[in-house]
Length: 544
Image (tube, rainbow, N blue to C red; front, side, top):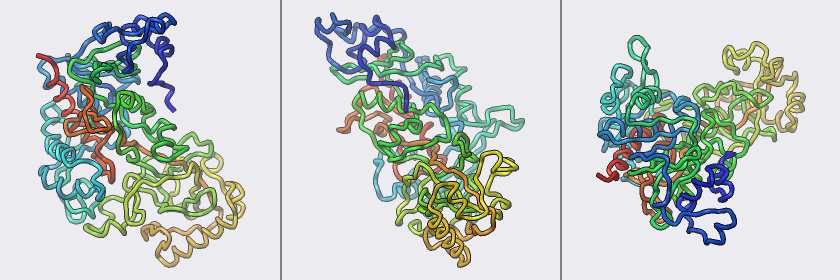
């Protein structure tokens, strides 16, 4: 859980920000009415008016969060603001957020209408979870991503991978090739240029651009503590960050990412406990709580690039691999503490070249950033806090552990081993009869060439038959959540009645558009698209 309390008592806030600052903004910061004289006499102070706030700094646009979304927003202010100013605050020592844990690929397209009416619409899974006007501006935006980056000076360092299929494989593999319209999707990536001396990731390029921009005050180690909101109008006036008050003349753009590192939110909204995030540790729902306090509605709280059961050491302190694209679990099976298989346990991302183009999405299998086919739908599964990856001597020899990880997995604390399944069951504290039954059934599926329980692909059916037998601890993991405040087509944050909260915007994974099936490259793309939209609308709100 986060150790940051964004719904503090006035006494707690005095400790955080100082009594003098509290006297200037307490009523505004928390959207409550001024206190009576008797309340003030007890040691709590209040503002007579929002005009009494003693601001420590004023900017045209304030951006909270320094991942790809925040950097894209600040870069837009710097490049299009005609001298208008931007404050970018990041609570850690370095910007980047989850971006650096991503591949860095950014979705592009050439025909916005074609990809919207086919692929992007198909990824909604029939749910209509994101309004069409929001999806439309996203699709229009991805047609502009390449040219926008070129305009910022990125051309020498990046490669446009193009659009469409080459045979049965897209130039940039679509995650759901079964859905018509995947052929309209393309991507770009950063390569560092011919001599590899330039930025090799989009977040690095944007960070360098923002750091060099005179219009941007770039502050790291500066956590946001609260939004400052006019209690009478609901208008967001600015922020409190690291004990100081900063005014936003045009608006505040929230780019604080997901909540994957907040145990309370993970349990409340995803029903998950014991989750070990694979990426950055700073996403602790600070922005979610602040926007909830300001009256924001939430959406897509169940969604993200999640969940899979990643092998870890027995001390539960390190992963063997974090990305589902790198898991080697085809060399065994995964069982719960009851000794049984319970899901399609080859939880690795199935790329487009592994799947028949245009085939039935409801019957195909594989993990797509954690989503799995479940009764014909593709959804994110709840996972247990602990499970075990079980394999045999042949599996170990074939590559059940990543190459170079260890020469002795038992001695170095990566796995438990036993000469019989019963002894292995005792070591991992699962019922021996259940584990033996599960393995016998699995081996029968392997002999028959079909996993009749969960339909794992035929080329992943490897028996667990040759002693010694091994077990590795697995815990649920994820790259990012996508849920957060509801965002409209103008990147404005909405309240539960669909009305925008004045001067409050968002971009990136913080209230992402991806509420059903997610396409890899899509998060980075929306960081750029909605970063631009939010910045432009916030700039338009600055008084002449």
